[in-house]
Every structure is written in structure tokens, then in C-alpha cells.
Amino acid sequence: MPTFKDFKLPDLGEGLTEGEILKWLVQPGDDVKLNQPIVEVETAKAAVEIPSPYAGIVSALHHSEGDTVDVGSPIITFDVDPSGTATDAGIAAPAQTKVAAQADMVPQVPHEPGMIGSPAPKAGSEEKIEVLVGSGPKSGKLTRRPRKVAAVEPAASEPAAGAAPKPQPARVSAAGVGARAAALATEVHVLAKPPVRKLARDLGVDLRVISGTGPSGTITRADVESAADGGAPEPVAAAPRRAVDFDPATREQRIPIKGVRKMMASAMVDSAFTAPHVTIFTTVDVTPMMELVERLRGTKDFADVRVSPLLIVAKALLLAVRRNPLINSTWDDAAQEIVVKDYVNLGIAAATPRGLIVPNIKDVDALTLPELAGELQQLVATARDGRTAPADMQGGTITITNVGVFGVDNGTPILNPGESAILCFGAVRDMPWVHEGQIAVRKVTQLSLSFDHRIVDGQLGSQFIADVAALMADPTLFLAWS
Image (cartoon, rainbow, N blue to C red; front, side, top):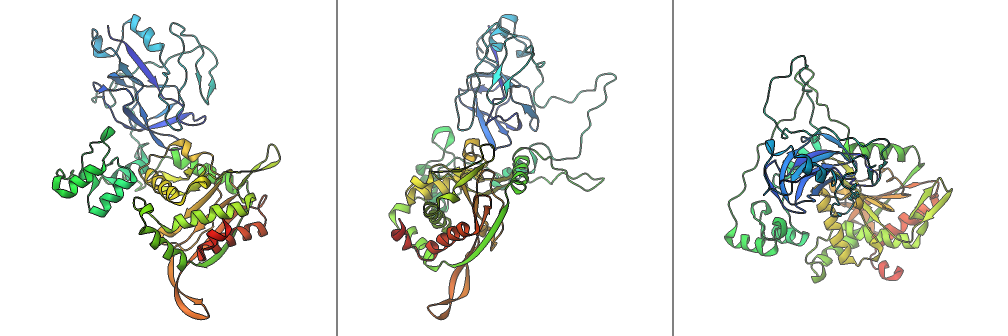
């Protein structure tokens, strides 16, 4: 006899209350394996793929793409015993199977970074209080939402008598400009590690036309080499671009403020009106740093990673933090204490189609230079693909924002909430500069440092940015100060 089990939307972060269905990766009738990705959900932290807690047949999807779903609400139903006798419509389970379904309303989900599951209530205890991590216990008797039997996109039908037709607002769906733009920008999403991506660039191979032979379709080095030798399949046809949805009456587009963009806006407002910001600037001749970057690119240790000026800036920041530890701290208003961190979780501000995010590399001060290069490359690639886990955006201690990649010289960045400093790195340009008493064309950039003036005074802020600039201007100081 078939056994139906509902899967509820788990808490994908620390106390998040809702998520938005960006894309269903399965449909009713699909045979799903354990841990197979079934849905992409966007929360206030990031967009993540949720794996299936069961192996079986998808019986029903309870929400459409673009719907915002409360944590703890059923989103999909599985038939975990498809060899049993089918019931009406393949969805409504008999009474004896409903108990099994209710007993696993919140299954133990395999833990992904930043995803927290909840214990399931015991079978037969329909009135037992559910507890979802981060949301607290619900009060009163447990009730279930009526199960939807229609598929995600049901056929159009006439409205019930007396029922008003559902309005269709002229606005972007909840997947929003972010997810749509990301999908259109990349056209075809591929799974490949950074060294494989670099190899593909070096060989001139388009990863989008390769079928991966690794786990879950991951493209391997052998796949790229085979494609370079002429073994690549026919290119995948690109999906036609769709025009942005504007209201023809007003010629306006309305974008819902939700998900990552909503969290970003709230965090920036809180930071701007909580911490007194001060920003200082300096201009640096980084010709020696750029020469070092070129030398590192030709060494064996950095063959499989991308070496960029940001790598040296990050290393310079870490050494400057060691010389000025108070810069790596936070203001605890409740305890009336300044908390100085003996570790560095380095955040890198990343602009994505869904909004600004700041993923961080944990304990970055313990990494070697090649390891740091690999982590930076992985962080940027993951953010660009919209796959940053919520856990990777929590616990940062200091941040770098690289506006130079956009050709911008400088800026006055806002602090990431909970941190006391953020370093802005501008574009590196050829400019006239006084070098050894003569005017010469040199590689020049600008740095700015915004800091929380409750913790960092002008002297400390100036010493810190001066140390970073000195290391960029003369990399031999790395040896003298280490």
C-alpha cells in the first residue's frame, strides 16, 4: 500500500521564517533519489538548493514558483512506496498511510551548510507541539493546511460560482529580476570546480556544451580535455531572452522587495544609523605589487588558481589586522563591551543579480597564500552562480569591497553589520607619479577605509590603512613584518 510523506520547508538559516520558491527541479510523477536536489529556494540570506529527504515518486507540489512559503509549511509530497496500490489521483492517501505521512512532517534533512532541520513529531500524536529550529514552539493545537491536489501549473478552469477571478498584477514574479537575470546571464548552469573552469578557459572550451561525467553531472578535467580534442557534443541552444514585464498602462515595472535584496536594505539602514561612520582615503603606487602578481601567475603553486591584485590586498589586510588588532572587533551594546576577535573571517562584498551579499572566508588568517587564492576564487564563483550558503554569510569580522573591477576609483562603503571596518579597493590605473625624484608612469590605485568611530579613532584607522598601503607599495615588507 502506498505511503505518502510530506516534506516541510526547513529553517535554512538562523531563525528565518519564510522562503521563496525560485524553481522546482522535479515535477509530479518524477522518480526522486535520496539527497537529489528538488527545489531552489531564496531566503533573506541566499538562494539554496534543498535535497530530497526521501527516495520515491513525487505525488504533488503544494506551491508554485514565485510563492513565498512559511517555514514549517508542506511544500511537496512523496510516495515512498510506489510499488503499493495507487489511490485516487495518486495523492490522497488512505487513513492508515496518513499517519505515516504526519509522523514525518518535518523529516531529518541531511545537513547542508547553513541548513537546519527539525525533529519530527511522533506518529499518532497529531496534537503534539512542533518545534522548528529558530522559530520557537507554536502555541495551541497543531493544525494542517489543506493539501493541494493540483500540480504547480494546473490547467485553466472556470472560476467557481460567486468567486471573483484572481487578479493578475503587472509585476515581476517573486523569482524576480534577480533569479531571471542570473539565469539569462549564464544561459546554462554548469557544475565545475575552479581549476577545471580555469583549464577550460585556457583551452578555449565552453563548459556549457559539455556533459559532465562526474558526480551529479559535475564536469571533470578529463571532460574538458576530451572536448578540447574534438569530443564535445553539439552546443546547447540558448533560451530566447524574454522582455521585462512592464505594466502597459503605467509603463512601470514593480519589483517586490524581498529575499536577499530586502535583507541587504535592512542591514544597510541599520548599519548606517547605528554605527557612526568615518571614511579616510589614501593613494598608492602599486607597481611593485602588480609585478609580484605577474610573477606569482607563472609559479607552479598558483597554476590552478587565479592570481589577482585582490589576493595581495587581502594578504596585506590580514597582516595589518595583526599589527592593529582592535580594527577586527565588534561593538556589543547590550554588554557594553568591545569584543576583539583573535581570528579573521574575511568578507568579500559581491554584487549579484539578487542584491549585494558579503560571504566570508572563515579563519582566513590561518591560510597560506595559495590556499587564500583558491578560497577567493571559489567564493567569487559560488556567489556569481547564486549558490552561496547562508552559513558563509554569517560571522564575518572585517570586509573588503573591490570596486576596481567596475572601473571605479574609490568609494565610501557602509559597514557590514557587526563589523568595525571595511576596506575599499579601487581600480589600478597607469598614472604619472613622482618615482625616485622623476615623473614616471606608474601603476596607481586608491584605498578608502570606513570604520565605526565608537571603536576606531582617527589614529588607529590611519595606522591601519597606512600599513595596508605600505605592504601594497613594497611587498618585501611582508617578510619584515611577518
